[in-house]
Amino acid sequence: FVNNQYLFLKIIHDKFYLKEIEFMQNKFGVYLANVHDKAETWDYMSKLNPNAIRILDPSVSLVKRVYDMFPNALIFPRYWAISENQEEYQRNPVGLANQHVEFWKNTIAEYVKAGMDKDRFVTVSTNEPRIYSDVDRNKDYFGWRKDMDNIYRYNLEYNLTLANGLGKQ
Image (tube, rainbow, N blue to C red):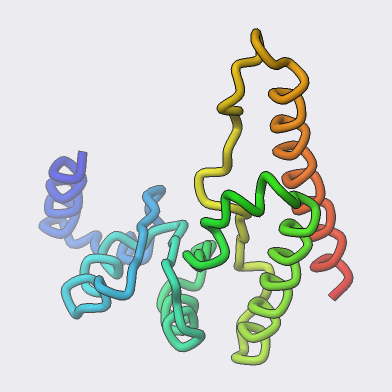
């Protein structure tokens, strides 16, 4: 598909229509990690003009660069350290959800201080959240049910608290 898209753009360029579609937003998204912070990455991204950009462990300045370069894209920052705590996810799902909400409120506030609109950001909870239980529900239904309740409690608390908290800013 990318090759066909290139061919499409080449044909349009040859017909002198490139200026009209130069800033057309693509339906593709990209995942940007700090190791990708190279000239060729930025060149590729500017040509792709993604509508969604996931950034791993970004500094505020990196987020600002993406924000300014892609004014129509949604930005999904991800911080590895807070998204991998699976043990706490099972032990204290509501407490962890509230910690994550506070982290995101503070992080988004830093972005706003740097001149960015909070509505351009999408936050997500844990990375690869557990949606299953290691407990065999046929052998230990109540253990399985406890695991599943924790999963639901985290996600419900995270989403409701974040939505209510960010909506009031």
